Image (cartoon, rainbow, N blue to C red; front, top):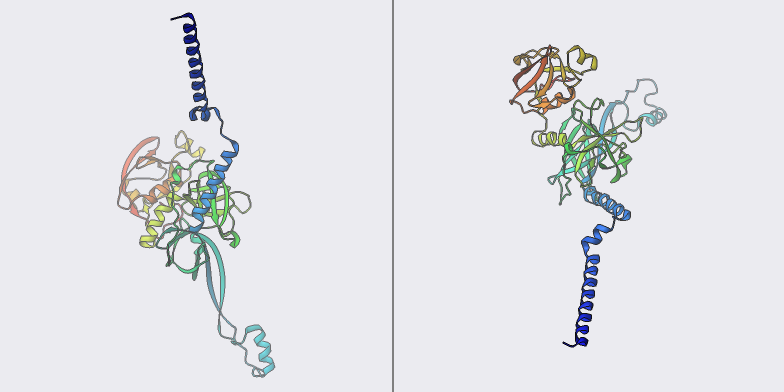
Length: 391
């Protein structure tokens, strides 16, 4: 090989090496993974994605939200005309008809009081979930769909203790149905979307967050475990759904604090599931009962009873002939666990016992005079006349 040939070979090798390095660098810079790692998410892209999520929920669920119109009919009788010398006078009759109408006195009159609320379709057969207070005392119910089509509805079941009711109408086509989610998985701070008919403004969508969970002592229903939200809720929203960003119903909007702003309450979806299944099947709700009256735990009572904190439920009274009496529970016993579940407070024990299956044998862990004890009892059916904090 001549010196000139050698130099040519070396030069060619150097050129190929440079070209290879250049292609490698280009490939590394142009690789999707590298660019994805190097590029930070665009704020506008994140905002657009969030906005798209809200729009998707509205478009998906609004067709399942209905306007409920109710009518209550009150009847009264007109006062009779007092007989007198001018009872047959035409001028007297005209004067009298101005006040009592042409029907004359002594006739029955009807006074119709309208009401409105919201509901959400939960079954393709035409079952609508709403609040009991929306349809309480109603003599007629009208269901207006998102398409503006109106149908006559009827109340198939109601549960005043949770403020829930089921309305049935006969659909003449396919219905959009909302899905009930898992409210036990909710976290404070998650997005919350309310859809309803505030002041008759159909299909209104408002947005907020889950402000709190497990709210009790609100004074709305016997069994309270509310979701608190700052999504705008107004008169007419009652019975409408509270949704998460997946479009699942996490609660049923039921009340607001009238003197505050941004304080609304919704019945959690998991409580709704247990109640609505029974209302659709039987028209009523059967609850468990252990037969005790309960009282809240305070720091002073906890210290007096030798307890480290205020968890648990104090037995204020044991009802004669109840499962609790049979099991040997007594006044001032503090129930700490119900069938293996820690009892947070007396509201929690109320819910646990009422949701227990009738006839089931459960284990109660309780404290009596500082001593931990365990007993088994069989759940009975709650008497219809039971009220207050009796469980």
